[in-house]
Length: 402
Image (cartoon, rainbow, N blue to C red; front, side, top):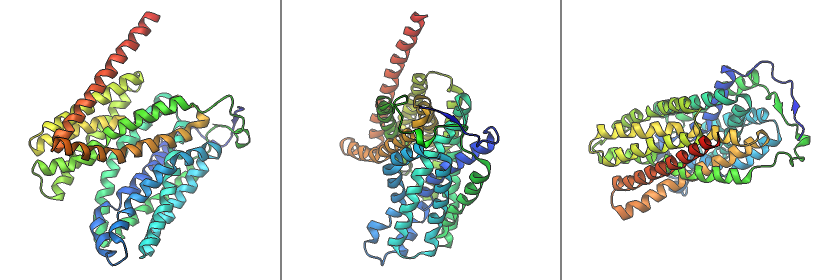
């Protein structure tokens, strides 16, 4: 494939471009978190509408399902057209349809607006992360992916708190947070440019030289799925654990969860420190830390111990997403980067849906949430042990080859 220099970059990509792309990548996360604090208000407001008990939860789940299903398609489009222009267009659509429900009061019309916003989410996720890979390489890329993970945790907490405060205005209050997409849209228009090295659309048909690495992507997808199932155990189950450990009010559980979540930026920092290590050693570190975190959660007997255990597990979680994204960006050729990121997001969100299902099934066998977490902890530590053995053998072979 012929590669062409595109003279669209007036300056080297730096902090401004990285921050804009990271903020854009956080918009889809905001899309699902924002309405959580007002769920009871939503049920009350739309109670008179037909099938409200079924349709109201879809206000939250519809964007996430759209992302999971459409991310690969969005990635394929991103590999064939201008990723920057797609990101700008998707961010604009996100802002318009995200804010639109403020002017609506029909549940079906609101769900249609949320569906369109979810489609925009899929394009934002794939193109924003692909552009981080286009703009930065090596240590710089690892650094910004780590910053993105840490910043995402902090902003997610602030978004939930802000949405709760805006919920005092009514069910529509948190929707005003989607206006944050407007300055991101303006910033992307003014301060970003098409990456300096991109293939032209008329040469996409000639992909014999750079074929999509199906086997590598399949391996990445399977590892992502398994890791995501484990990853979501802590965030999806920790509130129930805190409840069983004696925390009774939602505010107490929220504070305890936020305290444990401080581990995520620490994990992102730890990933940045280990980014030069081989990928097998990075995965070993993730599985070991997260496995011990789950183990500590399983044996915790009071809220303080639960917070400390959740903190350890979240350190591991803070490592996983930047680790996986950096590995994928390094493994996949640039012309297929957005497609790969789209497929990766599908496996990751699939893990989010499977994780609670497996937990419920295991709870039926063990009879206790903490006993089920103990089994998952032992499984995670076993994976860490096998990864360590494989890593040691790889290191031994390389030493003999010298």
